[in-house]
Length: 183
Image (cartoon, rainbow, N blue to C red):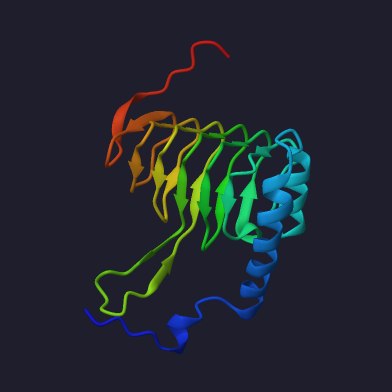
């Protein structure tokens, strides 16, 4: 396979994006990581300063890794666990009252393997409200996780998840409907 990198593939983002990435890299490696866990407001403030649409009622650990905050929307009362990786080459939206547990990977980009030049494909990820994504799950580009859904630990999600369902496995498959007994 011969991967050719012409000018359009070499620079898939505008120059301003690369400049923001440098600034964000400095902020991430200093203030973001070194800030004590209880200073979640400061982390949310830093995300807002970098263009994210976030609520101060949400929280993220210092080990949470976000590629491009300016393409991130986080609702109210969202928890991003330790070592969550948000590789958002396009828009990622996380709805209210959502928990994203430790070591989850939200992958917003891939390559078109059917094209010999492997062009970059950037797709949105939407996580609706009241969702729980359990430890170590992988969410692939272009996926929507429906309201109230649960993605089991170590699941690999390649297709949309219906609202109020529980999925698990690799690839993620329907396990059962989620029923709320006490509210």
